Amino acid sequence: MKYEDIDFNELYVNQKQNSTFKTKSQEAWDKKAISMNKRVHNSIYNEEFLSLVDVSHCKSLLDVGCGVGNLSLRLAQKLENVNSLDYSKTMLDILRQNAKNENLVNINTINKSWYDNWVEVPKCDIVIASRSMEVPNMQEALKKLDNQALKRIYISYKVGGSFLADEILEAMERKIEKKPDYIYLVNILYSMGINASVNFIRSEGRSTVYTSVEEFIKSVSWSIGDISKAEEQKLTKYYNENVKDKKDFIDYVKWAVISWNK
View 1 (cartoon, rainbow, N blue to C red):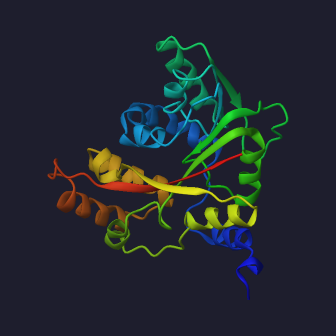
View 2 (cartoon, rainbow, N blue to C red):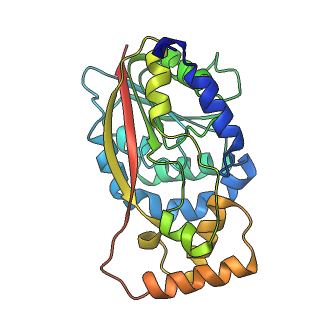
């Protein structure tokens, strides 16, 4: 078998379908919006991601899966027009309030999902999709992004097949079916005739972000779904022994930033 004979999108689709980590509903993201807005703006992730985004000779941006606007707000200070797209209405409500608080009047919000028709979504110089590409069919999503971009595309995708650190899964004694890793995206793009660049950045891990055992357990449940009472007890033990009193300890999550030019 030759490399060209491998259908990486089919492999992605199959692994995604079998993965423990399922796509979140609009309602789930609506509920997540307020807590996200409290922490996401101060993450090291924002500046590390933006350090890779070249805005030179660009006027417009499409931010797909914009959330509460941690990137849209920053880029609105550098570009003439920012279009922030998300399927969570609550996320967009908070983004609009955040923009008002910063006196930003050049952000247009768009309430659409990956599965909607984007014929009315404006094409922009730059398209970004930051941590928002947990989609069932990656090739379709990548084509959609590429079609909207006039100059440059930047996306980020978690490195590794799990949203939970191995030591947390071991503490829970939970076995998982991994999700597709970032390398699938690189190979799918290659099959589309796109030679993408790859860089790596960080965000704070959950052991750093969450300051109580209740928040920690809730975060784990958000990633993996329902957890049993026995697993809660194991996570409490893990938190107390490994996280609670280690105030100077910082753990990180690694992200691949994949980019290409038109």
